[in-house]
Length: 341
Image (cartoon, rainbow, N blue to C red; front, side, top):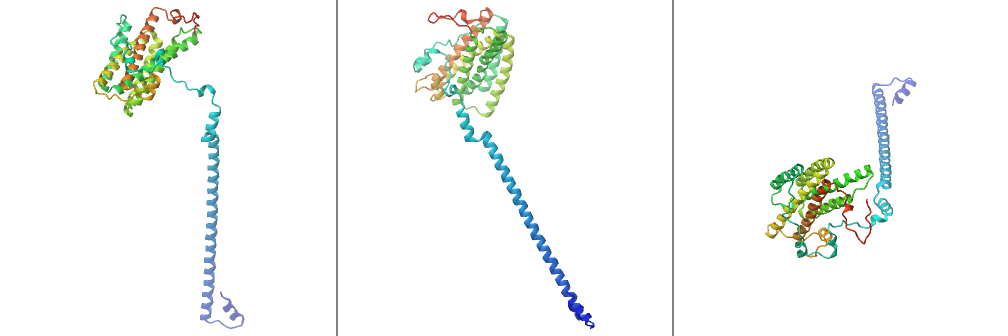
């Protein structure tokens, strides 16, 4: 500060240069101290403001996260959502609807190996084509089999997966198209829809069984899905154009299936494929003996394919004969009239 210098001047005394410099130095030191103090205060205040702002932002994010979590819990939260679904579940959905096997006598008793071997499947049975469309159907099926033989060779488990993925399509496509036509024409279907959907479900159960045993890898799954997509599109178009030819194609496809499963059994008997224990889904579906093996499953599947073979050839014949309604030839049960649907 300059206070000592000012006092000397007021007293009429001329300040010396030493006093003058001392006064100037003291004033500059005080001014520097004040500026330094002010900067520290400003820095401290800035720090407090920044901390307060960060805390405020953090609290806002926490509140927003908690709000979103509460909304998610209200919409898809685990416990409340599950409880609500279970509480509102209709009673008919609580009863398991396990698929029914193709043969009515399947549930009469536990099927052993001799029982399955006694089923007449006609392993070499073949429908000789007489129409051009039938010959084309047979040519198409056998042509499609050649790349399958090359690709899978003796890998019968994976070949069976491919076969069932394709074989499960026709019944569903036929049932759907006949269902739509019945609605559009407002007329009876003739009893086909139920049989076709039952066939599709049966083929899907074959697939579920082989998936338990075969375990196809990713690239095989991709190939199978691609083939099924293409077959679905082509077969749907064919069924809309000519149902008779479409059923003939399925009949020949099932002939090839019976042949493939016959070779499958031969490979098991020769010891080239391990005769492992049958999966639980197969024992439940075909009511197999608890000691059932893979060979028993193949016998059961082959018997189903033989039935599909005969059914689809018969459907094609009925369309050709203009006798599509099954009610005309159904057996009478307890003298009760048939109810058309």
